[in-house]
Length: 176
View 1 (cartoon, helix red, strand yellow):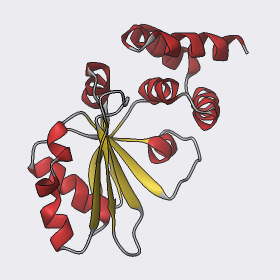
View 2 (cartoon, one colour):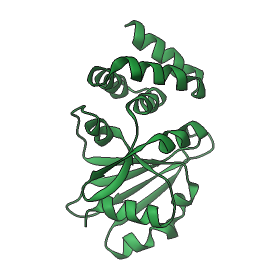
View 3 (cartoon, one colour):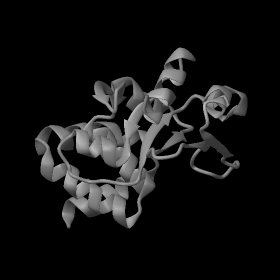
View 4 (cartoon, one colour):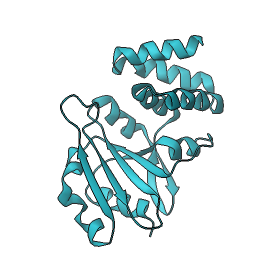
């Protein structure tokens, strides 16, 4: 059983909503991009309780729980690693707009796991929030691989939920 399946099974059994984000989610939407890890998103702070991960640790996985401090844009990150497996990073968000991304995600099968994947417009929102150089490139790739008008409309509709600097970045990318 893949590490991703073990992680998603544990989260499902614990009734913790999550969705796939990052490069694997981009690939699921037709944007070829690869990284060494798989990224999941949740807003459920129970995932920052180290005892939740005991079954995976007993099965041989290494789990590192990092809590964000008060000023951190994330509540935390949980990194799960196992030999010969892609590392799984569980990004723990803080905001209701991130929960809505999880709610809108659609199910797919990846590495034997049935998991939901964030919509293209929601991947753009996450990339705007992260705002790094790679994120800007990723946004252009997402827009180039999708039915652009629908994605643009969805981003515009949802953008008001994000901090103002995300809207400014979006405007600069749209006029570039």
